[in-house]
Image (tube, rainbow, N blue to C red):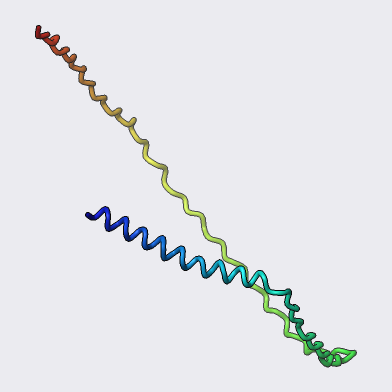
Length: 116
């Protein structure tokens, strides 16, 4: 029952799409059959006016002289610090190794018995 409803809905959907595309196809055909229309022309762009140029003085006025820079003080030296010698470190003991556990052999299962 549900299968026939799905089929009916699908058929109606395809029918509706075909009718809607027919109008679009006819409209496109009418647009293609129109005579060539003249292309619109744009008005010319206005010209850019020239901006007035400022006049610069030919001689520069003398600038006031700056006071001399103060001398930079020197950085004081830091006294060197002498550290006492490091105590001798006894040899580092070695880490004992963990013995490996031997693998346990697994026995194979007994052969299967066949039934006549």
